[in-house]
Every structure is written in C-alpha cells, then in structure tokens.
Length: 251
Image (tube, rainbow, N blue to C red):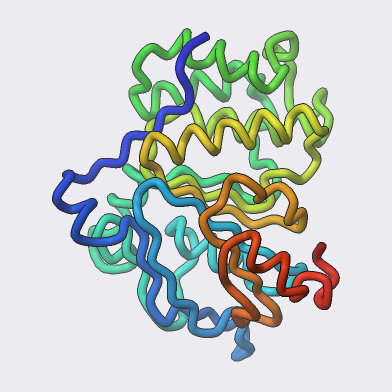
C-alpha cells in the first residue's frame, strides 16, 4: 500500500527548531459585539497534535477557522511558520501549508468522489497522484463509490470524501473541524491512524471533537473550551483524570 499521508511542512530545519509551526496569540473573535472566543494563546510545534473539545458555541470552530485563514480575528494574531496569516501576503502561507476540513462536507454537487480528488490533485500538483488517490479511497472504503455524486452518498461518505481531499495534498498543518462526525467505527479508526501518521511525518494536527475518546493515543494536548474561554488544558490523561470533561458533560 502507498505510504500515507502526505505531510510535508514547508519550513527549514532551523526554522522548525527555533519557532513553533503554529502560534496563536491573544486570539479572539466577536460577532455583533459578542465574544465567541476570548484570548486564546497556543504554540504548536511540528509533529504535535492538539484536540479542541467543547460543546457547540464553545469557540472551537471559530478558533480553527481563523487558523485556516478563513475568518479574520477581531483581536490577536495567527502565525503559520512564522508568517502572520492576516498581514499582506500571509494568506499564501496558509494556502501552501494548511489543509482544512470544515465541520460540514463542502462538496461540488456535479462532481463525483473521483472528480473531487482529481481537482485537488491538479490544484496542488500532487506527486504520484494515482497511487495516493487509490490508497485513500481504499483506506476510507470509498473505492466502489468513487463514481458517485455527493447526493448519492451518505453523510459519512461525504465526510470521508472531504477528508480524502485534505489528506491527498501536501500539507504542514492539518486543521479538521469535527472530523469524526458521521463516521462509523472502522472509518474513525482509519482516520485515527492517518492522523497519527501525519504527526509522525512532522505535521501539526489540530482538530475539534465532541468525542473525547477519539483523541486518546493521538494528541499531545487537549484544550477544553467553554463559552469561548479555555476551561482546562493538558495531556489527554490529565484532562480525563481531572473530571472537568465530566462536569461539562463532554465525556
């Protein structure tokens, strides 16, 4: 089977040693004058994974969307490989380094599963495209559905299609908003393995989830958000042992 995923952080070894690949400073976002996320501070080095855990409205999606360059902060900064994402020219760093999966499958209605992979392959100049695409379709049990349109797919199959697209291209930072949503147990295991491989290859992996158990054995840190603030942060084992997730009803 072809090696997966395709994590290739576009930073020099010296840069990777001297600064975090992802840096969030005093990051916050307001909607109509109401704070959805207060000041979030976070540094993530190459080869680390972070899980954001919290209820709907806790600020998880807002934080990840800002990291992905899709939502300008009200305050604070987002840096990827030392580049301020929201300064002039910063979006180029996001396009080259960050692969983003939103919380709802964003697919073209008139393109099949295979067409979506073809489009990503062309847009990002994916090397060894045929072998990589075939391997992802196999890992996510999509091979027999590669000629189907989004309307012919279940919610889980649509989710796996956009995950395949995100993992197909080269990336240094993988950002996934509720990636487990709609996935059956075999697909969750497949995704868990792919994210672990991305870490091993040196990528930053950041994802949000309601299912804390998915983070076990994968993440370096768990950040629990509640009402836009960090309620707790630490290793998976520390957060679970603290009882904080039980109190918030997130276990």
